[in-house]
Length: 78
Image 1 (cartoon, rainbow, N blue to C red):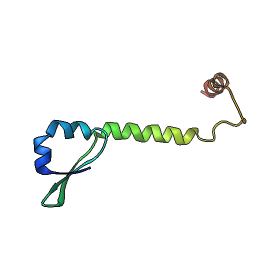
Image 2: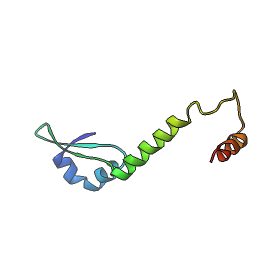
Image 3: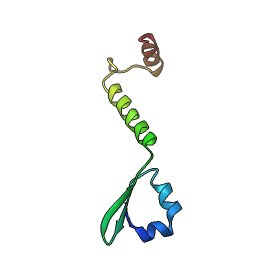
């Protein structure tokens, strides 16, 4: 989202809250001067979840396996 510095000053709390979920680009005279972004820990957590999801794709070998059987198989590998 792109907003002016004036708009940012007027609604600081609103945009701080929004920056937890998306990047906020601050502009001055039509040029981007700064970016407000989500905390590193939240971004790192999202990346870790995506990596786990990528590893899970294709991990099931059968056409269908029940959740309880899948859990048992996963626990036996530890």
